[in-house]
Image 1 (cartoon, rainbow, N blue to C red):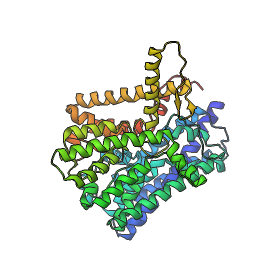
Image 2: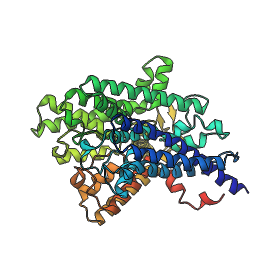
Image 3: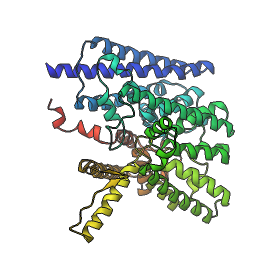
Image 4: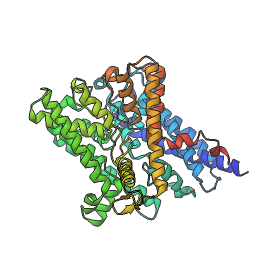
Amino acid sequence: MVKTKQILVVIHLCSFLVLLYSLSMIPPLLVALLYKEKNFFSFFYTLALAAMFGGIGWFSTRQSKVQLRTQDGFLIIVMFWLLFSVISALPLWMDDTLNIRLVDAMFEGVSGITTTGASVLNDVSGVPKSVLYYRSQLNFIGGLGVIVLAVAVLPLLGIGGAKLYQSEMPGPFKEERLTPRLADTSKNLWLIYLGLGLACTVAFHLAGMPWFDALCHGLATVSLGGFSTRNESLGYYDSSAVEMVGGIFSILAAVNFTLYFIVLGRRSLKPLYHNPELRFFLLILSIIVAIVCIELYRSDMYGAKDAFVHGFFLTSSMMTDNGLAIADYARVPSHTIMLLLAMSFFGGCVGSTCGGIKALRFLIMYKQSRHEVNQLVHPNAVFTIKVGNAPIQDRVLRSVWSFFFLYVFFSCFFIWLLNLMGYDMVTSFATVAACINNMGLGYGETAVGFGTLSDPAKWLMCFAMLLGRLEIYPMLILCSRAFWRF
């Protein structure tokens, strides 16, 4: 009986989330009406289908009042992200103007909602404006997670959302909250997120972009999604101001959003300065920016000014897993690109919209490695590993190293599989780095786009994007026997 009730509550919540997500088809539908585009119907049909199935599932199980368990939270997250991906792909697949196959629509939809930004479309500039807006909206919604938005209204259903929130939010300290009530936490995160998106849109417009392009790039930048309205990405505008805006807001979006809440609450910038993860992230970012700028200048590609602008923007975009690019990105010296691809595994701060392993985990591993060296030198000494003034518990250390191992293992496994499919090592490494880190910029055969991948490779990279977005554990937990022992 308990099992039946738990299954019903999972169906109930998934149906509600599908119903909620169906409303996201309204803005691109209105854009299609505004520009009198035929793909209005593809958004309308998707809205109708998602609302119908979500509504039926929600109303038919609305009496299921059972408290969520940890298992249910993980199951709902994974199931919904799979449904999320399918629904996101539907308007692209049904759009006659795009004329793309299901596998390509799925790749584009998964890439958008996981904020990867890898595209299979050959001519982005020729795509209808409603689709361009829709792709950026996918980035924006996926950036902070529709689940975090949903927990603000889950109390209305009589079910707490804490288990969903802990499963969705990235990082090793998932229990932290901004406010005592989880619904308030969700609302505060989204208000900060929306504010940053608005500021980025206005900044892009002031830098010279038309309002429509500024809106699309603003949504894609603060989500670190990387979808652009142009084939050349930001390189199309040939503007130092545009690239500087893109680089600065990429960094701002890679900061832990809880810090913004604290800064606004205290009306002081001191929390930013005193945060050890942010200082570590900015230190590593500064070092990589300096190296890339020097290498671009040393290769005679650019003069000193352009080398700095392009180097700052490209490093900020790739290291934070944004994925916006300069026009001649593929001509950058290969050793520089390989460095940036490797740094995409670093990512930004936990609690941000970036992908990758995250700076805090690297900081903890660095401190523990230094601790081990000191312990070997002084075997009888007692050392405590701290981040700032906070000691790190053994549980967190085990979690960080376990996650690091799994992340590296799956990355190597995906690289090997692509290599087995016939792709060279550079293409395999770059493609996996772009997808599992949700970064979106390939190299080698995928430098011009991901449409050249075979169908099996596209499905594999869809899985890699979802695995990276959910930080591996939720999907692995569903594969364990212990999980299914209700």
